[in-house]
Length: 126
Image (tube, rainbow, N blue to C red; front, side, top):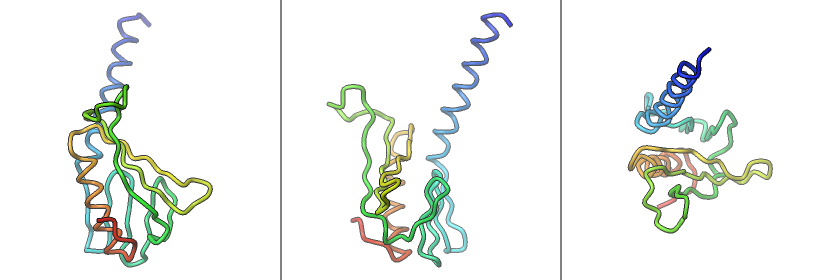
C-alpha cells in the first residue's frame, strides 16, 4: 500500500470519528415520556436509573454534573470542545466524562440532564 493511500485512510477514519462525536451531541431522544437519551447517557424515569457507558445506577447516586472546556493552556476556556463530567457515588468509577466537540451542545446536554435527573427522582442541580 502506498503512503498516499494510507494517509487517505487515516484522514477518512479521523473524519468519521470526529463526525460521530459531533453528531452524538446534536441528537437526543425522549421516548413516551419514559426516558431521556443523549450522548450515551440514558435516564429511565420509571425506574429512576441513569445508565452511563453501559452501567446503570440509581439517580440518587449522582452527586454532581459540570462541564469543562478543553484547552491546551486551561487559561481561556473558550475551546469549542467540552466535556461534561457526571459524578457518581461509586468507588470503582466516580467520574464519567462525556466529550462534545460542537459549540454549545455540552451546556444544552447538561441542562437536559439536570431536568431528566430531577424528573426521575434524583437530586436537583439548578
